[in-house]
Length: 116
Image 1 (cartoon, rainbow, N blue to C red):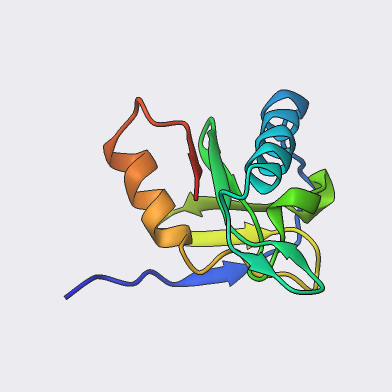
Image 2: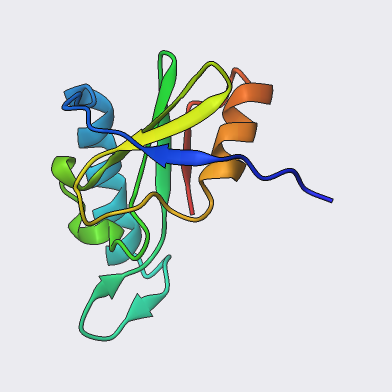
């Protein structure tokens, strides 16, 4: 059975570096334009992304549309003393696949980004 980790919201104003965010925004628009993602009527192109940055990762929010992604939409996740913490816009939670991303980034140091 898969292990599920506790994750808690914290207040932190830290933002991701500009370059990986620009890359995520660019590829979200490209994947939408090429019809590589499911389309949600009246919302846009669905999908999720995440990238590693030092000792944390940045992911899209639950219900986010990656073809309209903005820097302020990203959710940060880190682990401190065995507890996973997230921060970002008050009304957003990280994608439900955050544990998969975390596991891949932890086990595969050559993987730095995920888009699906």
